[in-house]
Image (tube, rainbow over all chains, first blue to last red):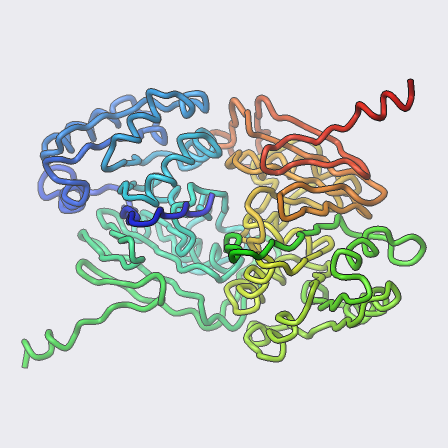
Length: 282
Length: 282
């Protein structure tokens, strides 16, 4: 489940979680940048629409990525665990430069793909250069520890976040999406309160983190990413609280990052380049 | 959080989850075997009583391990996240041949130790030879994905198991404890239903899995270990079910293993040595 190991001489691919509802027509900056990273006119994209129950989710993304100039785009049918073992499916992943996982229900993704050859191949290829983007449920599934569901509201209570094992592309962050739109700060805090080892990323709609091979991400899109860092947490009461009771957390660090901002998930520090800005305004 | 990497030439230590309430006086086969593996008369044991709120938990295990002939036994005070950064604590772990994590509340362990220098050192040293045993909450904390709580009963429903990130000594198994005594088959099944990548171990009281560096474990003690293997699962309905609704699971494999039985967590196969037994009875 954990990030696979990178072969000597190879480089990891990007991981690109999107907060859902990304712009697809007018000014699709996120999807444009995704195609650019995957090779632009040489990009070979596979769309995994498994999270969705809508019939046209896959073909809609096919059109969008075609429009953005990708060389080849295919949506694959993966609607059972047996599909995840088929050569036809695995070969397409082997030949892709980028994979895009659509929105829907992240538990459909984990129950259908978890532990299969497809899940293993996605981890292995991402560790060796395949870029993987995903929106909404497709973003939630990416980390080792996935927020599978929960309840709304700004302050955490016990039982607010439901965790499940995800795809394991990274274990440095936990991801929540539709963040501002669905008021999910409490649920992200309660997920981190269990075990404050990871950094939380709360990603707004039409906003993405482009997480590079070095663990540094840049924010792209019209909203913000709320970074919740419990590295220096002094105390979490979630062990003592009963279900439904509020949870106490002491010494959480918070950053709100908008388009162009960068953050290093390894050092857990924002990368600040203010000096130039100050001189320009002087 | 995931298992640390083993250095060249080194060998991983054992991981020894115990289902709680292990015999300590009359015929303490589990604790005896733990001390034997840790070096017998040369064993240097550190006890981590953090999960417990009882004052004498640590000193009780000190007495038991002394009685069993260990060279040196120390219970350490780790009751805050700051304690997990102290040199005094880290040095004791550096010098130990075995660490024992007592019972109590596994969320006390994850909230106090998670992400600290102590948690990182335990993973690193286990990857390079330190043996780590734990009972009840001390067993629950061991895997990457920890069963933090839940409700009783034999058949799974959505919301029955609460998952949280654990210590990450292994990601091959999920562990439940007091298994027969507290009727936890449903909760283990509902934990595995989220993402059927791991093997579930339901460990009875006074029973332990001695998981070796090769991923093979042997059962020791008076109860059984229920192995729940969803590797060939055809279908899980947990994505569709609502909270409280029963969950459908198709094609789960089950083994009940008693003392002396062995199971390979890598191939997910019991190791059967019946031939001799048959000839002996012939």
